[in-house]
Picture 1 (tube, rainbow, N blue to C red):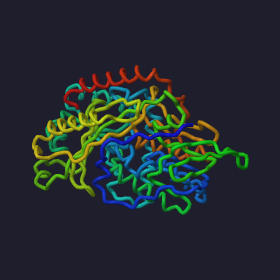
Picture 2 (picture 1 turned 120 degrees about the vertical axis):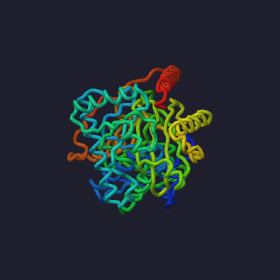
Picture 3 (picture 1 turned 45 degrees about the vertical axis):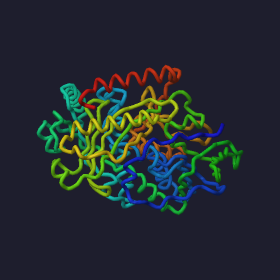
Picture 4 (picture 1 turned 180 degrees about the horizontal axis):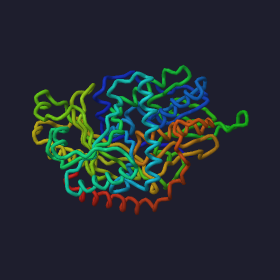
Amino acid sequence: MGQIKLPKNPGDTGWKEILPERKVNPKLSDHLNADFLIIGGGFAGLSAARRLIQIDYKAKIALLEACEIAEGPAGRNSGFMIDLPHNLASDDYVGSLDKDREQTLINRSAIEFAKSASEEYEMPTEAIQLVGKTNAAATPKGMNFNTEYAKHLDKTSESYKMLDSQEMKDLTGIDYYLNGLWTPGTAMLQPALYIQSLADGVSKSPNTTIYENSPVISLEEEGMHDGQKVWKAKTSLGSISSPKVILAVNGLVEKFGYFQNRLMTIFTYSSLSRELTSEESNMLGGTQDWGLTSADAMGSSVRRISGIGGNRILVRNRWSYNPSMEASDSFMSAAANSHNESFKARFPMLDKVSMNYSWGGRLCLSLNNVFAQGEVDEGIYSACCQNGLGTAKGTAIGVITAEKITGTVNSLIPDFVDEEGPKKLMPKPFMWFGVNSYMRWKELMAGKEK
């Protein structure tokens, strides 16, 4: 394996920037051994670490994170930990009934795992709240999506509440939306706060150590020990040797030599406003905290938050397929402009409010909407490709992988069944043109939903 080069993260993630400074774990600067090595400190990696601690408290666990905790993709999402089907490749998010029921149970097991972590580690309330979310429709087409989604939920016996335009205004303070579909099972996160709190909680275990700003530059076979193959992960200043390795790096697993040409790296983009004044907050009205996903899969997600970082509004829209795993500055700028336009269209009374932070974040998709998971080499397990649901699916695959690598039978995610692997993609030039053309068309068709 050649030297691994990591892509840069575009923009400063507002979720992390609005938090108080925390004590960052040191870089790896020694040559160490561990019973388990986890590469990646996001939802999958940290959830795997917590599950390994539960399974074997005495095991020596090391986790390597390439940047600071919450600086990477885990701290760059919009904070929806969704329990219900949310297939980004589908216009209405849903799939087959049986598959959706299975996925819902897995997502809810992950949410329960995250909630129990928040209680065990005494996280701030804002880190994770089980308050549900609303699918918001700004057009008749969006209303039709909500109607069809409600029919699907009826078939799966899921509870929901349809909100009319007045109820949407009472919630948000604006008259932009025609209706909404509220479901109770989504957990809303301050993703940077949650992931930092999870890392700090895991680090309290006496045999678990997290190293930040320690990107792995190579992962090579070191030899055999006690009948097991041992792997050495090198950083610029040190190394860790272990017979058991978990790759929790999402699309970057390709750079380690696995799932080649089977995963798509998609960027999504978000902006977070400056803190609203009390006068602006009163002018807006509505409630202090809410989260909207768009009834149209390519529309805008919008959140209003209040808490540690103040009273702010987040807008997320625009997508790009980047086989290089890096987003261009020009597209980042275009996305930020799109966020401003979407904000102004929704909140005309806040015409003096600007965006403080704009950023992009990587997510990973497979053509057939499956994980890139399982044992990929002797002692190396992948916990990657969450298909756009990194919060819930990342947590789930982290738990599942910790149980697989230890041979644990009593699973916390009891409904997971091994799937087929990710399907092979077309050559990158065809994929780049086809996927980006499709997304531009879908964004255009989203109209006022964007």
